[in-house]
Image 1 (cartoon, one colour):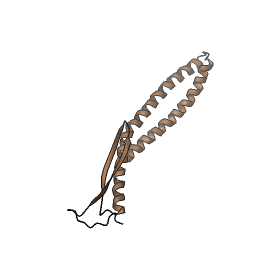
Image 2: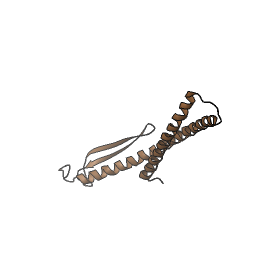
Image 3: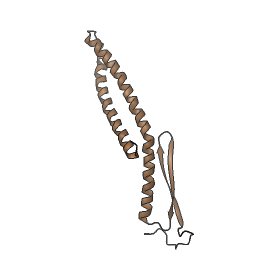
Image 4: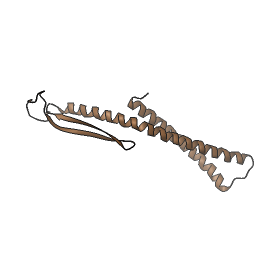
Length: 140
């Protein structure tokens, strides 16, 4: 299937019939755009292969830009979990030493145990997402 019935009458035998733009929004208010032409001698398979190639390039760049954000989010979660563990350790130590904890502090102990467990799961998911993004983008 050809997109245009013209004969080859340009210098190289190709006539540009139109163009296309592929754009992706990247993190941090950035974007990437690829432009290309549709030529008179392009068939469906050639055009799809070119578009697929450009989309793969854009997707790789998007993933590469996303990795630092994923790593920063993971680090933020690790820091929060460290702080929660410190508070939890302090409260548990006070309780073990015979100090009576208020009902609010007892509730905090119970909630923190649950929250730390959930945070560990989210951190693990984040680590997997980072590894997959690096693998897909060809890093490491």
